[in-house]
Length: 536
Image (cartoon, rainbow, N blue to C red):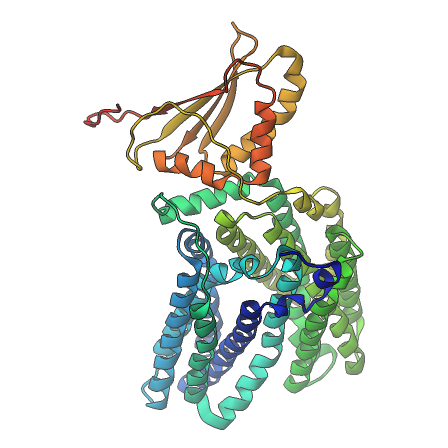
């Protein structure tokens, strides 16, 4: 499907697609329900116990799964049907929330049960998030993907801005048990939309990957994808500085601005409204500036806002400053998210986005703790000023780790047949050592040296455990590529994982081959002592 330039830059263009529109609205309702749960659970815990530690543990129970299960969740999003995984995790959360609501209304809930339910809800959310994020490119035309990501970010920000407020009002009106049941109902929208969505699934003759193998493959892909590594480095550098203001805003409100909790909520709302507006203006900005320029300009704007907040002692001025900070923060985060999705092919998208989310969440947690310690030791103005200066300084990374590199990556599937020696192997047989012999004249040596790094990264990205290139000292034009696959079925997956960029790297090497026949591939299987298998 093609889109005009106006449609691509319009922030609302993806909403013309019925499934995306319905899922977007349903996800906002679900996110609001999750924020309502946290407010209700915190309030209920204060009535169940006087321990501040147990109240604080609710946030820990909600956050632990995002660290412990992010990578397994990403792997499951790639090896299972994403539609079914979303249905399962949403149903999981619905049942947990409903059970907690019933037990609360029956007055049988206790602190341990409340913590357990919050943990189980966090597990469901973490395992489902990579699949939920990874299906966005399947719902909208490629030209509308940046706008769709911006709308998703806007929905999350809007939910975070209004969810706690709605939760507080409903706790007073219907009690914690009623809020838990409303949270359960909030999952029904996503369940209905995803159930009715008929997702096309390409048939595969290969068995699904094992979970541990899928996780290792995902980490290997990240290690050999320089464009994705650049996004992750830029994300970590930004978040480590960005988190100072949200983490310290409550203290700023009380100590520097001398305001109440309600005014703190108003400041958070200003930050959230700014984020929503940032998501709306970003598509237009992308039409005029490249991703690196956007990330740098918005980072500097956010740093200026932090410097201003560090010096402020009057409340009214803080509201517009935080609104601008919300616009700037959303501009950077959406740009990084778009860059991450742009460099990930479908087969690895869940795992890649899980790593991206893990880097973001870990960076935010470290940022909040680190700048909190700095504020305690050196004072609020000093901590915010140092964070702002560090944020401005990290923009120099744009010179080395460029987000525009993602635009040169072709993640579309490509199919190149590779000849190999016919053998009969079971799927789990291995490791398999594969060799490809090339005849490359010496006058093409310079081109060969330039092409080898891209081929090595392509093989490693697609699943090779080890890769090497050998030259024959007795025959100067004979070269042998050797790489190791964990098993025969993992070798068979290589051809299914090739992207346009991988295929270009392979064709570049093949174009240097000068033999009478195509480069020949051979396969050697690791011999295990005592194994009674005949490889014929």
